[in-house]
Image (cartoon, rainbow, N blue to C red):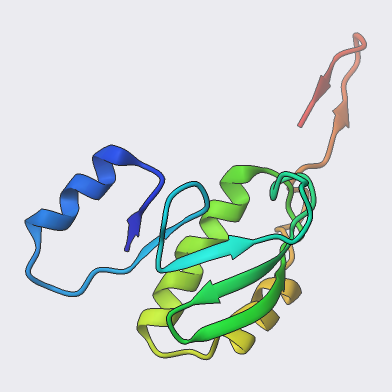
Length: 114
């Protein structure tokens, strides 16, 4: 599994004789997320998951490009194991962040953490 959006990582492709699946959103990739609207993927985490095995309608609970990339990396692994894209998308939609993830804490002295 190689991140197609990372030029240095893609150079690793020449280091193996084995199969390689790529994932990403900025460059051509085997596993990717597409949108019909002109909203950044990481601002609204609903997308069409596209794999060599087909498509599925995905959504993830956590905001942020890094979370989308993690979801695509996991989707690439599932694709390599021949999991249908609809099942991958279902799993992404049902995944929940761990307890307290993203929770904002208000501390004495007026500062916040999270």
